Length: 247
Image 1 (cartoon, one colour):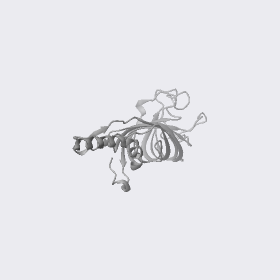
Image 2: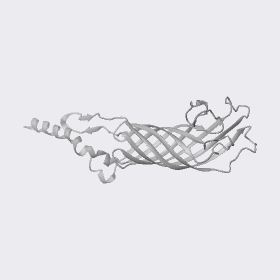
Image 3: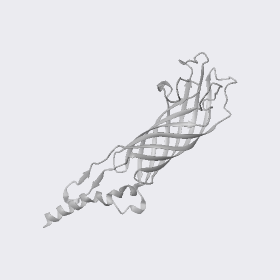
Image 4: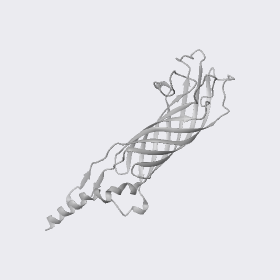
């Protein structure tokens, strides 16, 4: 009789994902995100031919960024996220069609943005079942690679410093230090455990300024823009009101 009860209990527990565990995401709607990555600039210095962004990345001028943010899940596929990022942008005319001009710069930049995310492959965290005297328990290994696209609105505060021939030139202009930004991009994340995920994200920032590098000219057809890539560690925060439920 006891053996039969154990098997009945096992069957019931294995069926739980179809009911209560289908709503498990609601217990951990909030996430804390810490990231580290690289930046790439596109503007009037180190300018390369072609539509902005449709060019090879110059790894010698990729600079670091660090970020912290938070995400809140609206539905299984929809999220909103706020993120603060600090990074450096750098560029030089060296090796380009404007090498004789010899302008260069480095800019420190702070960006805050709010975004909407939509998952084309929704997040699925593995479920651990604790079966007590059934041994070590069971684990449902159904994690997938959550894939999402995002878009949003934000602002950047930046401080360009001139280098090479731009230093001391009357062409340098640091009178503008703020711009609106529109971040667009994509990301992936994968669970390492129920509460810890690893993510990778890359996004383009369209801006409203042509002075992130401190220089503009009559030949400039587009505002400056830049890219952020980020490797993220994501920590889920369990809702205190649901602490009594432990899947």
